[in-house]
Image 1 (cartoon, rainbow, N blue to C red):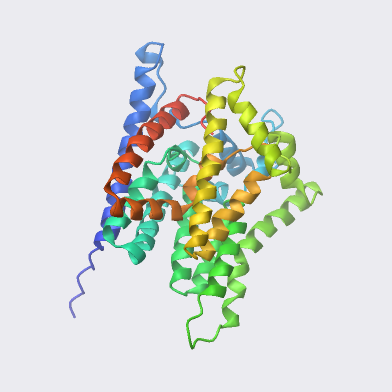
Image 2 (tube, one colour; image 1 turned 90 degrees about the horizontal axis):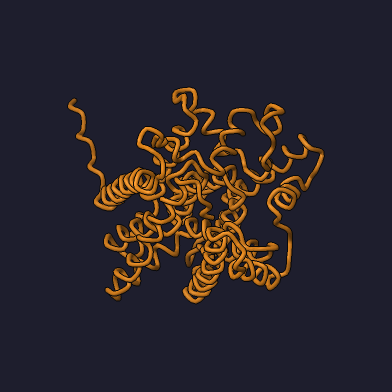
Length: 379
């Protein structure tokens, strides 16, 4: 019997992958052009493409992948490795069996994982708003101001490669798949805690008229929390400290529990302090702007009765706002998929939104790519 012809990819999937890949080309061009055009040395001294991406937390993820937690040589000091969950280092370790360069391995993980996330985002948007909103959601996500972290060997792309399909599965009431994917997301970032809460809320609110809630669907939805809890147990086994993650955040990064207005005032002062290094002042200002965007997004989600998404975004905001200063809030916008869908839906209704967003986002995204690959602090 003749084999069936391969089923063609849907326009939503094709468009999402095309947008993702083309924007990756743009990021690569920006990185190389910025490195050469802003260089002060001679052409022979310019770093190669891979070296441009060996910045900041990339080295920490590689360190964990190579040596594990607390297993590194004495001449390779700790830089707060316990603050980073093992999902990405584990994938790097596996990929390193075939790819010898650790930084290249990280770039490949983000490239593939970002493509998976882009497709899932498009499918989520298409389910509610159609193909135009689906493709624009991916575009807005891929060129967002902090999208450089989707290209570098950071954990955002890998987290979304699990979290977005998990949410898509939950929308389809495929709870076992949602829980397993959510559990995998929980190995990558502590944000898995909020994803787990959102999946539970989605389960509680998704019963249709005449349906009976199947309690056997509940246990898999606890896997995101179990993944984070497992990491806490592992750190305790290594250090004897049940609060090792929190203590590393405080000792290595200066982030402690604080009242919301204290964190806001500290961040505002840091942004406005004329003695502050300019890249850090810019980043602190971006943190405040991102917090405002997150608050507005949460209010909109509550008004739309999108309870699960509101818990997901609002839970992250609550945690970020009760730190001694705002940190990683701007990067966290990448994880707020309702933001990109709602922006695209608004642009489909009001044409000026599309132009306005790209007018702001594209140059900010380009500046962040150039700054990151030059070794400047981005956030």
